[in-house]
Amino acid sequence: MSTITEGAFPYDNAFSRNLGWVTEAEQQKLRKARIAVAGLGGVGGFHVTTLARFGIGAFSIADFDNFDFPNFNRQAGAMVSSVGRPKSEVIGAMVKDINPDIDLQIFPKGVDESNIDEFLKGATVYVDGLDFFAFKARQLAFAACHRLGIPAVTAAPLGMGTSVLVFLPGQMSFEEYFGFEGCNDTEKALRFLLGLTPKRLHNSYLVEPDRINLQEKRGPSTVAGCMLCAGVAATETVKLIIGRGEIRAAPWSYQVDAFRHQAAWSWRPMGYRNPLQRLGFKLGMAMLSQGTSK
Image (tube, rainbow, N blue to C red; front, side, top):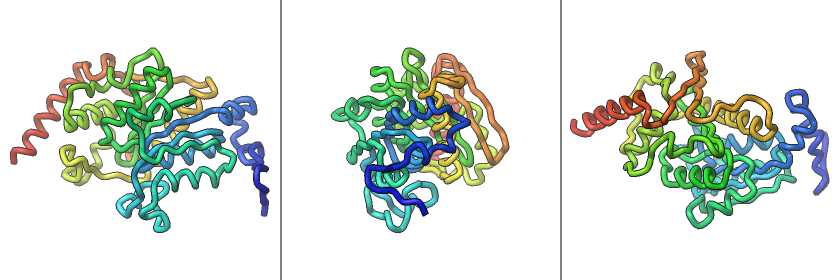
């Protein structure tokens, strides 16, 4: 059994199996990168631990919540031993257990206007791990990334699959794509859902649609979807860091669905202003209105 002494973590040996898919020079780029991840629940915890195993050398992580039993079906740090403990503390400890030399900055109160610039300071890439309904924090984080010129990746768990969007400096922004400004939370939820899933591959096997309620901010989830999110988001992040591999930024997105054995690209020029998106939004709001009037 291999052991290490304090300050002697064998980085090159620990991440040597990455080599071949990345070069030694590229692995050092990963080692020097800092990834900012806000939200450490459903997808965020897996984002951090997956990227840590790629050999990322520095993280800024943020979450104000504690683990509880409803998190057990999908969240990386949700265990009996972590119930009641801060998610940032638990995920931080997991990351340090993967690589004790990681430069880790923890923001235990989450992100807001008072700390967003400090949270993103030095970040190579921002990876979105916020709860689906954390609209204020998400708008804040993506707007700050756009202002600061930081690439941003978001991956949503959808059934037993995921949908991925990348926002690059100087290209279409999160707001230009989703159009949250001036919307209430229900409208934001619908715009976010439509923007993430133009192909809606997951819809065909949703056996109990009434489990989704945008007004009440609840919906079903699976660990398969969350882990697929982490895999694809980490891959896009690695490509951004090493500067190799095609990046299709918004208004491009892609969805991968393991249950249906399908994958699909989507292109929505003009974002939420696209005629198809506008039609989907109109129909969705009408359905929501009918549901509340019953």
